[in-house]
Length: 171
Image 1 (cartoon, one colour):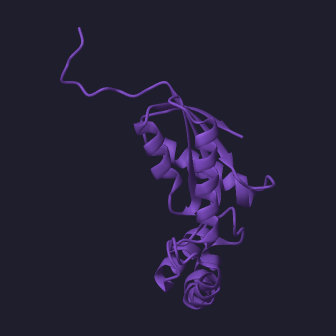
Image 2 (tube, rainbow, N blue to C red):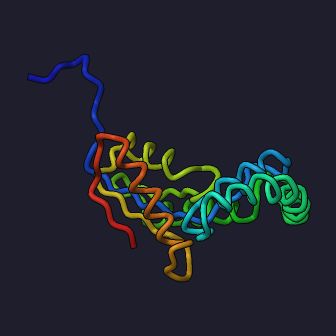
């Protein structure tokens, strides 16, 4: 017997998640600092003693570097869409792929390893859309601990915290 009050449960779809490095949310000093902190706190990116590194990162790098980086981002920032070129082109790539191969059963989306949209938010969105199969496609030209492995780490960290466990492929 079907309960008419129960919301429809979406299932049976495949989600393809393109993952790129990341970008700050804006050229604002605080947004750049938040992005740099997330990126440079990843142990796969900076492989030095974490205690020493956190002192260097917080006392020197995160007080001086955000201003320089913000100035550099301002030079390339897409003012008409208020986003970085990396975000613009990654979104465009996902939209074009979704248009060409997406259908009712295949959904193509994108996430950033550092910054927004996060891997966690996009995995949750694919879950809500009924994706039981997830294909993760890191957009790096090489395999390295600081690139593809950190994407894998974040995907698994996210899935470890939730009950939903899709069929997963990382290509």
